[in-house]
Length: 442
Image (cartoon, rainbow, N blue to C red; front, side, top):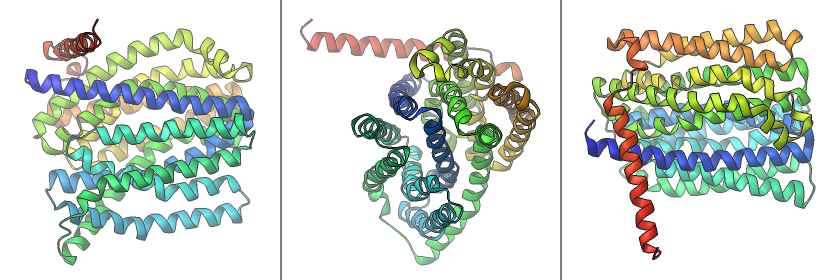
């Protein structure tokens, strides 16, 4: 990677990292507000609704990958891709939202109405980033995520502390926030609606989006089940209050991924437009940086995390500290999997590889959690998650090395080019600080 490219990659990654940190801070802030004002039970219901929406939005993840592939790699006219995307919304997403709303009424679970109403808006927000990421524009995705988290924190504070309302009101505000950001998303991608091609082209693009998108969605759904299967087991076997406590450990542990996930955004264009060799080199680069950043941060969190959780959330959530410590080894291992997944899906066009990896990991997590939950409580979910995430890393490494001919040791061997990323980034940050100091007359 040339010096100019390395510098640009580092800058984009750093900017994305800062915005993701801000996003996560506001998201955590909203969770703290809900936990402290509504207690473990209210936090459990809030987590339940959010988890269901996250599972539904996997449709948006699959469609987003399909949009990026059609527009960025296959060079289809943006208007054709846009029209197919919107047809998918009306034909698939809206009926699913209606079915979930009906299920909420029939099963007397009003909490499910929130994800049912939020899903159409959240889908548009998710799929809309496909165009900008294919163009290498990471700003839109970053601003969109930050806007949602800030608005949610403000709404939660007003409803919980200002008006002293219930979790139902908070979930209603959650729907409104997603709707407002959806308007922004539609405005931002309206420029891609031009050049919509012929009816035959739009139908063909729709069919391709369904075929490829559903395969990616299936993998995303399995991946989220891998993330969330322990949550559902804890909810079913231990109840909402236990879920409220366990969700704190999970949320803080997954926060570590925000140190590495910006790399998936800045490397996205290389995965869709680069050669297999270039994409493989980018994958190696991202994996090494992810292991270093997440590994160091997780070691620190293992020591201070339990104390910090009790301080921030209160004594009622103290048991989450041990669960967090048990989660961290898996968090470090799994921080690498998104980069392998991008390579398998966007570059090779083989999302079925991810299917095998994620399905195996999900089954391992469920089996270990169920086996241990009566003896260890919520800690069983953390143990199952760490074991399954480590298994996923091992399988991905094996398949990637076979596909590329890369030695496994290359995933951990830092090179001079890797270190150059940090040097260029440091120079850019210091240069910006000096410029700011001079402008202010320092």
